[in-house]
Image 1 (cartoon, rainbow, N blue to C red):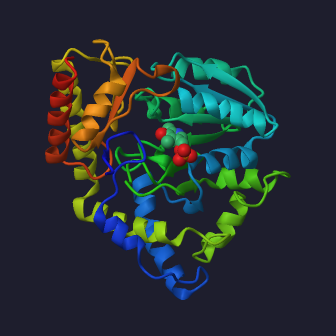
Image 2 (image 1 turned 180 degrees about the vertical axis):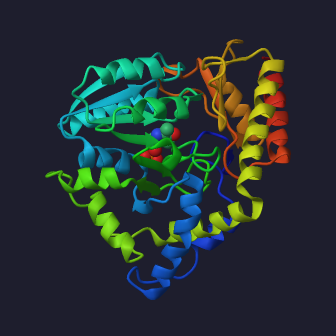
Length: 358
Ligand SMILES: *Cc1c(COP(=O)(O)O)cnc(C)c1O
């Protein structure tokens, strides 16, 4: 039996989304596809707070995270690091043959705007990678404060991962002056994995046009050219685009403000549950993610045993990412969850804690 996922991605996918994916294929150069593609653009722009083009890439987020670097990093990239995904981005930059430096913070500490300013002021950087919501440790950095720093360095192109915050909290790409903003499908959008949305500023496109080794599959200039025709460069994952269309309809029906409020409310519900049971948040106070809670395992609970128990009740949570395995546990509240579904999970967690004598 498969259990309902409350891990921070992939998250549970609704029957409605699965049905949307089962529709017959259309040609990706057909009028039907162009109409579908063009219908999605304004809704994606609203979610990202941008008038830039928003491209649909057939890959998980890492494809675009790597590809963006190859488009815009010329001399040296600075990678802001405070968790597993942001740490890995430095490694990915180096694997692309780029010169890259890390601005390292402890896992669970937010990226510090003053430290970012001091490092960029040293000069030599022409791109920055930044993760808004470090899913590995449930830490959400202050994007407006960091963007304010980045705006003072106009030669530095920003690449911002909003993979696990997109559509759950407002993102104001244009107001913040962010260059490249990307998000994957299997987090707060609650779609299956395999699709990434990415929005790119004019400045970033101009930089990309001069990049000799940007490749083909993630060539942003190629994406822009095709976008103008309502298409993608290569054959896209059409079932996921059907799913995205269905999800954007749901989001429009709920309303953006209500969707953001729901994520914030459910996040608090889980957080208070944890506090009442003697756990504390792993990330620094005031920087806990709105889409998941990463609790420090202050009670020394046997997390594999807890998940075993929880599975008999039909649910799974995450027992800690990488070096935090066993030391933290993460509960996602992203996607389609409601007060009722979260309350059901928390009751099952209580029963499971009791069953293992914790
Ligand atoms: C999940 C996640 C990724 C990686 O996404 P893939 O789908 O595995 O490529 C990157 N960044 C963040 C913040 C994530 O949460």
